[in-house]
Length: 157
Image (cartoon, rainbow, N blue to C red):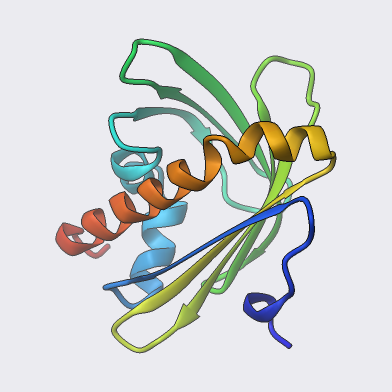
């Protein structure tokens, strides 16, 4: 059984999308600040990246700017980086408390000129899961659709 075939747990949101780009390009779009700033977040959001080091123990700090003017500071700490197949990272608000909201596992399956992206959001508590489920499913689907759009016009580095 591969990571993409894992059964879903009770406190997990799983979003899948096949994007129209080879896996290496998807990896670049997901791990390079100049790309991810152009597509990360649901529709209407923009992202300002303050730091991004994609390595085990590396930190990615960013602010998501909502269409209503609200700002959402975020901090991600990478726990596993397997290029170009898998990223595991802890996600928390960037408020100095370093209390993890959830863990994300992003996998990228090579389908030739396409890539299957599977994003698993794993919550530590039922309360965290229930609060996030209200917005995270739609938001993650919109984010992956924005990734697909970005990939279509992305300059390969």
